[in-house]
Structure formats: structure tokens, C-alpha cells
Length: 408
Image 1 (cartoon, one colour):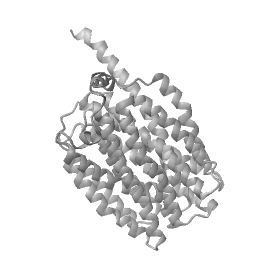
Image 2 (image 1 turned 90 degrees about the vertical axis):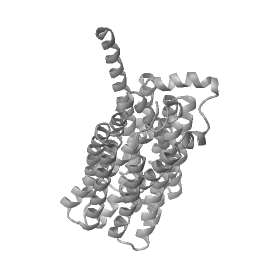
Image 3 (image 1 turned 135 degrees about the vertical axis):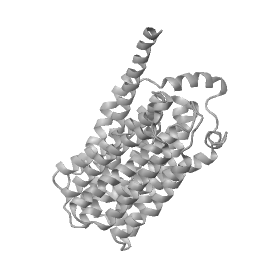
């Protein structure tokens, strides 16, 4: 018996590794695009003569697209399949990232980032579902975390391109990479990424029942209401902090007297910390009590925010940024995994898509409010300090949501 099952187990491991590898690559391309505006912001502001308030709008435009993109992409994933919707999303965010490199006005910039966000939003719920459904339920936190490591690595790549690209007009290089790469990788995904076997099996049975259940039944039926609301609130608050840091960190560091190159280096440090945090959180959540992981990760966020509000030397700023990346991106990956394990297979895309969409509201609010506060004369210390109670709310709701879920 052992001899006959070993090849099957090896085949499953190989298949899961292949799926996670391709999803990791797509997530890395998403990471490039999501952080591209923040990296390019100082030079974009000079070229277009943008105020602090306008920069906040530019940061938030892509996030506005992520909201409906995640909702639509997640719902379509339960109807059309994860792979098909992922491919459509990749083509969309690649094409509009290229358009961003060719904008000639602030209005065009907003439109390009909004449309890019639609594609980015549609991709993430499918990456989460494909990763979670490629492995056994006990390994889903680890699988989602491995996939999500691509996001901060993509962000580090965007920061590296920004550091290496000299000249005020060289911010366009980031968007060229973020646009061409997804269009090149999409045919590989089409040829080599298998559809989720769990989804295919569920879809065959669900066809007789006219597809997945209504959205409200998915989110709030069968005792899921409290858990859904807790996940949503934690997503919302966590992404306020995350996208405030992603978009404003380089500009805030430059405002403290550091050079543009030093700001780029701290952005790379942030993403290195993010990779460490994502891997640690995924591994520990599958092995420890999840609530202990929640407490540790959000404590790291609060400590990092206090440090960022007070320190000014490059060394201490780098340590604070490293800790912030570990905490806030690790927390986001934990929430993605939590959403994936909270809904059954045939409705997982809808449930994850809704959670991601609500989180995207936070990703809009964070940069926008920060821009308004800075434009109104608030100091960087005040704006960073205001993020601490937001992180505390995120911690409490994530802690409450971390209880066993009975899903397949």
C-alpha cells in the first residue's frame, strides 16, 4: 500500500509547488505595480507640479480600482474559474501600467492608475484561492504566505529600479517593467498553470444548482456573519497603515533630510522585512496558536510606528522600516490566509474577493487622509502617530476572527 500511494503523494507535492511558483511570479509582478507610484512619486510630483493633496489622490486612484476589481474578480472566479479570471486581470494591469508611463497630465495619470487597479484587484483573490486550494487544508496558511512573498519582492524590485534609474524622467522605467512583464508572463500562465482541482470538482457538482450561492449568503449565511465582519474590519485598518507606509514613506524620509537614494534604500529594507514577516507568519500560524501570532505581529507594527515617529538617523530609520515591513505586510498575508480558510471552496473566490475589496477601502483612505493632513500642515510624526490606534483596532478584530472554521 505504501509503495502505491507514494507516487501519488509525490505528484501532488510537485503539482502544488508548480502552482505556487507561478502564483508567486504573478504576485511579484503585482508587487512591482502596487509600489511603483510610491517609488516614482517624488519625481512625478516635480514633473507635473503636483501638490501633497494631488499626490494623495494619485496614490488612491489605483486603490479605487482595486475595490471593484477584487469584488468582481472574486465573484467571477467562482463562476468562470480562477485561472481564466487571473489571466484577464494580468492583461488589464499590464496594459494600463504601460499607459501610466505615457501620461501627459494629472487627469490622465488618475485614469491610468484607476484602470490599473481594476486589473490588480481582480488578480489577488484568484492568486489566494489557487494557492489555498493547491495544498491540504492544514498547509493553507503556509501556501498563501509563500505566494504572497512575491508581493514584497516585487516592491523591492520597483524600489531597486527607482534607485538605479537616474534622471527626473526615469520614473517611467518602473511602469515599463510593471507593464511589459505581466504581458510576457500571461502566455506562460495560460499554458502551464492548471485550474484548481478543488474548484473544478466543486463546479461540476454546483452546475446542477446554478452556480455559487448569492453573495449575501456566502458572506453572512451559516453563522459566518461575525467572522466576516471581523475579517473586514481588520483588513480595513491594516491596509490603512500598510498603504500609508507604501505610498508616503519615501516622501516622508526625503522630508527629513535624507537623499532620494537613501529613501529608495529604506524602501528596499521595508520589502526585505516584508518577506521575512510573511514567511514567518505563514509558518507559525500553521504550527502555533494563531492568536499568539496575531498579538506578536501587531505588537511589532506598533513598535515600528513609534520608532518611525521619533527617529531621524538613517540606521534607526532602517531598523524601524524593517520592523514595519515584517509586521504590517506579515499581518496582511495572515489576513489573506484567514479569509481563504473561512469560506468553502465553491464560494471561496466571493468571500476572499469581498474581504480584499473592503481592505482596499482602507488602502484608499490611508494615503488620501495622510495627504490631506500633510497638506494641512501636520508633521510626519503626527501622521505616523495617528496610525497607532488604527493598528490596535486591526489587532483586536484579527484576534477575534482567529477561531477554527469548518470549511473544505
